[in-house]
Length: 205
Image 1 (tube, one colour):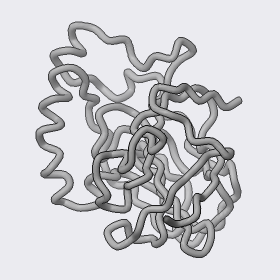
Image 2: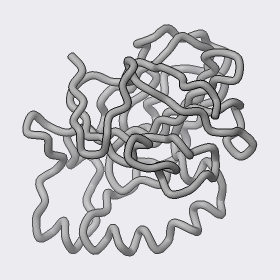
Image 3: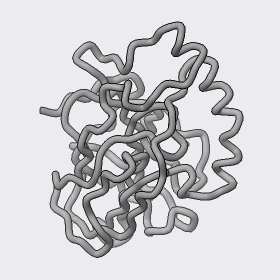
Image 4: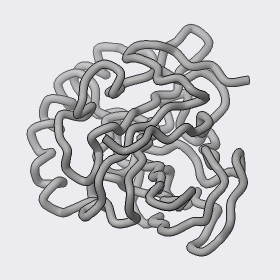
């Protein structure tokens, strides 16, 4: 197994952990696209909730800006150089309840379209030899960096969105050994020497 890479959390505020490799590996149920040790963070409010769930949530898709974390800044989790950027995908509706079931049934179509269809808007940063971090599902039009640009830890890269294979606003983070996720191998990751588990809430001041 490759050596674990330690990052800082790429955000501030309160975030709920989902699909953590602390609970299972591969964390997202697949090794495809170097996602073996990927982790998701969902922005939540002071009570640890995303948008209020209602009868409408159960039956219908919801606008992404209904969710409290939509548009929160996403920051560089390490010093590095921007290796790839994509910022052309729309922020689609969020899917909970029955709409999430229908959305899940179409995931194979997005996977067949490759990395961009799954990652949505994203930034990939080379942080060291064989160490590349991808931050995905960013808000359309929010990416503030370009390829070749050096970044410092904490620099704003974009904003939390709902682009790509996403049921509600969140950020997906994964580390790999090469820039191309279709050819890379996944690398284990920790954040501030910690790997939070599913349903834990991370709060960064």
